[in-house]
Image 1 (cartoon, rainbow, N blue to C red):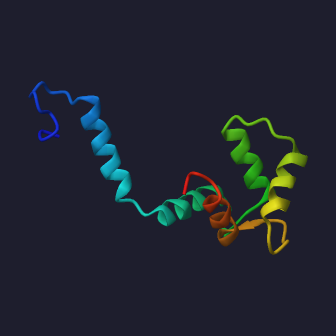
Image 2: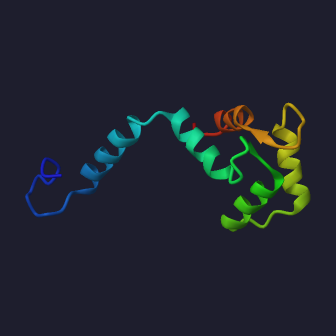
Length: 100
């Protein structure tokens, strides 16, 4: 941090903070971050995000989605039509967002 505290005040300027954050996140592998997110969503550790998992995630995020909306989300991205979102399907979803 000392190299970013150019005035030696014990604080860093916002531009220095921004530089630190950019360097930190540029070094991260986006696929690794996607896999970590998938593991958090896959509460049952089955290798799939179930309707129940998705409902919990929505609730935890404060999203007020109906069961029909949640099922529609799964149906839209469930390429193998097994009723769940597997890791490959989740990666495809994330690649379609600006988060990737």
